[in-house]
Amino acid sequence: MKKDIAIIGSGFSSLAAACYLAQQGNQVTVYEKNSTVGGRARQLKKEGFTFDIGPTWYWMPDVFERFFNDFQKKPSDYYELIKLSPAYQVYFGVNEFTLIADNLTEIKATFENIEKGSGQKLEDFITEAKSNYDIAIKDLVYRPGESPLELITFETAKKVNQFFSTISKDVRKRFQNKKLIQILEFPVLFLGAKPSNTPSFYSFMNYADFGLGTFHPKKGMYSVILAMEALANELGVTIITNANVEKIEVENKKVSALIVNGNIVETDVILSGADYHHSETLLDEKYRAYSEKYWDKKIFAPSSLLFYVGFDKKIENVEHHSLFFDVDFDVHARDIYDTPKWPEDPLFYASFPSKTDASTAPEGKEAAIFLIPLAPGLEDTPELRECYFDKIITRLEQLTNQKVKNHIIVKESFCVNDFIKEYNSYKATLMAWQTP
Ligand SMILES: Cc1cc2nc3c(=O)[nH]c(=O)nc-3n(C[C@H](O)[C@H](O)[C@H](O)COP(=O)(O)OP(=O)(O)OC[C@H]3O[C@@H](n4cnc5c(N)ncnc54)[C@H](O)[C@@H]3O)c2cc1C
Image (cartoon, rainbow, N blue to C red; front, side):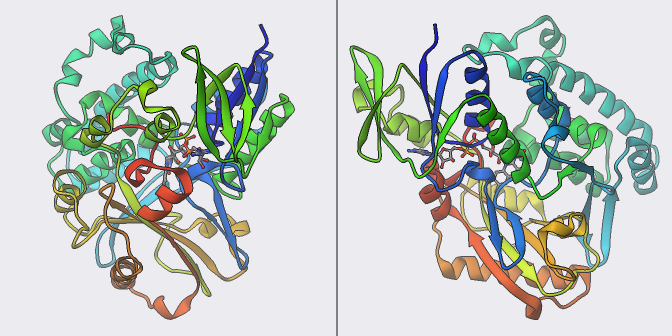
């Protein structure tokens, strides 16, 4: 039977759900508190520069294909994908970096150059990672998530040992060189956990990295949000922005309405794509599944300090994606996961989308996004942001051998306070879910 369905938020999750529910013939309305759709994947435009505020790595293109295919569409109906070559660059010291190619054959050669015998070991590792990918991404993630028992299948049972070892152990068993270890441990950081706490099974992220490659949607990741918004519109979804959901009303133990900007909106079903903790606080306390004590004890994905910078010149010696692993990750990781505090010497990531995509910066200029991962829930002040900006810009200058500080013409930042204010994010985490 056709239902009235109200969806809270307009990030990837809400837009995807809206499309499927509308396809099934329901009347779907999306309520987004911010003035634009996209949630953590929104976009910032300033003085001719375009920055993705959140995600910048387009991985697992098959997942996007599968999504659009469910509606007899293709990603290329909405946006153009560019495969990055090299996929990314990793700095380990002054003028010392490794380029990760866009294909496994060249990546194997790079490994072999750094550590003799590691090329074949990498191939074996990626073959296993692919098999995990086929199980995890092509099957498990599409299960409803109602019970942990969904994870026990014939295929996962065969790999049970991989749930008792970690990525960190697995990688270190095969490779000795510190650089190779860091490169192979990096992809699981996307999941928001330390490689030493992440089961080996999650090596499927390494297959996504080396096996499938890194892509850039022209005009930025926000093109994907616009594509999903367009599809939702085609399917008859109503999307309302500047619509803050203040409460979920319950009648006879069933949700009955939302309070949006002070008005009652009756509905049959409510689905929330906002963070779980926030979604629960929209209910009266007696209807919540978890207490504040429960949430406080949970381990969350990291938060981050971000900068969106426009330079008045092109930046040299960097690629579209550049990782700065010139400091000890174990020390930074402890500051994120074990004893939360601002890191002394942070690892950081920089994206220069205008290296590939001229639409993101005025001619002759460079758009840059900098990200420092942080423990969730740290203190956030303008002084701390400035101190860390200076740290990373100084490092960028030293490592890539150039002067950039006096060439900044646009600069915005985003940190803990913004994650909470903009997205109602619990402890300002990057993602709306818990770590694996
Ligand atoms: C800095 C950063 C970098 C990232 N990098 C990558 C990357 O490179 N690649 C990648 O794949 N992923 C990356 N991610 C993760 C990815 O961006 C997120 O997982 C994804 O965007 C989350 O989508 P979502 O729909 O789950 O949540 P959100 O995008 O947070 O959507 C939730 C929405 O709910 C809205 N909302 C909240 N409360 C209310 C309310 N009361 N009423 C109405 N609306 C409300 C919010 O405004 C928001 O729009 C990154 C995330 C961040 C923050």
